[in-house]
Image 1 (tube, rainbow, N blue to C red):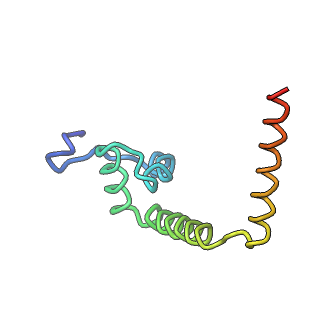
Image 2 (cartoon, rainbow, N blue to C red):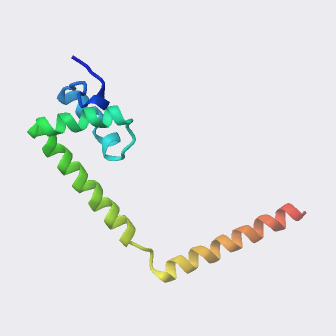
Image 3 (cartoon, helix red, strand yellow):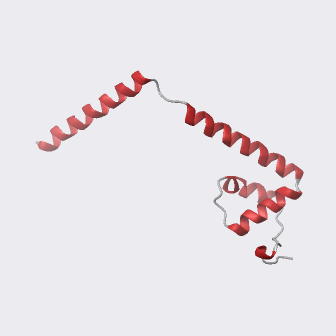
Amino acid sequence: MTLNWEEGYVKQIDCQEAERRLHTFLDRELDKEEMAEVQAHLDDCRECHSKFRFEASFKRLIMARSSEQRAPTGLRERLAERLRQQRGERRSRDDK
């Protein structure tokens, strides 16, 4: 039975549906009702909860690694200079 999620009841979803929504759940892109449905399933299903923990950890690792990595200073400077040159070349052509 599906009752209003605001009253504390949520529609039960199966593992397949929970897995289908997992990434949007992790990204907090679901509406409140859908978030509650997935969370309720994860609270009751050990296997899906394990998958959720893995995916959440993996996402945190990717975010941490991607924010830590910066191109070396020399490379950034060469790229910036090349972009300036290309803009200058484009302006020269546009002025003709």
